[in-house]
Length: 145
Image (cartoon, one colour):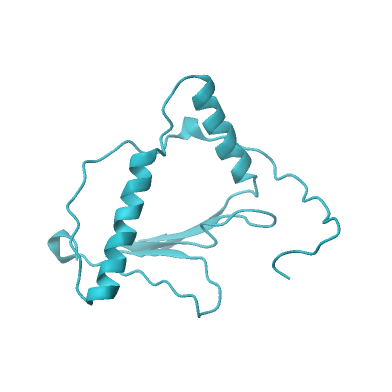
């Protein structure tokens, strides 16, 4: 539970059919993104937002997200700038995962002390690259087939 009796629910499963979806429901509307985490060939991140009975759908173009991330980090190194997704951001993710693991072991809700707000991604960090053509496999097959 969060302040003012707000509630969040997370479902993670390794035995259900693949689903890559983020959904946020509120008192005035909802937003759903799917797919929303993966990237690669034929993966266009999209979202649907409904507010006051009006729905907007947006589909982002397929891009090479890994190339964009690599270019951003390279720019940070070349310009002696600290990247926005730093070790502190990673630690924030890890502490949530550790709390989930404690909850699984103990069966008890876990409380995490709030952390100070931090900067968030900015539009000028974006680097867009068209998705490169996937090269043919040489003397092997796809690891997912």
